Length: 226
Image (tube, rainbow, N blue to C red; front, side, top):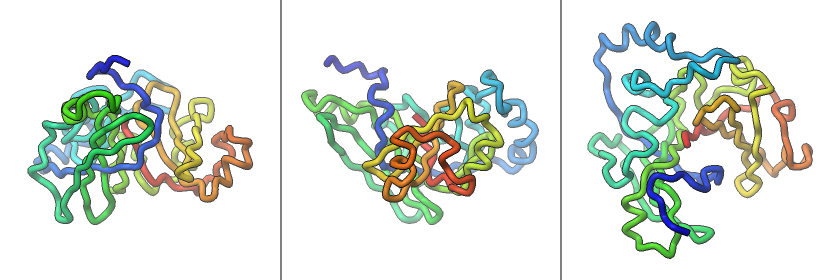
């Protein structure tokens, strides 16, 4: 397999990791945030309003289609600035599995972690490729961060289905992690994870769960940009 730094392969594989960094917006910028963000909010059926725009990145604690205000999909993981690490510190490591290596940076904060991961690199290639890989996944477990549709860690399935119709929602079970990934079939890069303790929902649905199989009170425990 030939390594291509700009490609995003194995993107459907769930990797349990997390990342964070703080950035402060001026108070005057915050005052008009609701009005400006409204322009980019997609409705439940329109697939053209997703925020692939620079405007989203102006707002702190906002989960944009391509990342957060301090890191984006495609950034070099080697050049991510860690100058504003919150109290609690950070940890980076090289992970491996199924014949691939990748770099993971986990940043700790009081309300929950966020992890940045680099692209999976075939382990036959020098480790230098791993350090130079682009960011391919950002996992948020901090409820302080929310999407432009106000979904965050702790939001319920009821809230999610009030935004997206059932026809746009697809579920993928990850039994090894007792989790189910939810993505919306509207071109979004955001994926929502819910717990499936002891694989109860996956087993009950025959391994092919739908949104109707999840109790409406089920809470999102992580949001992944990928």
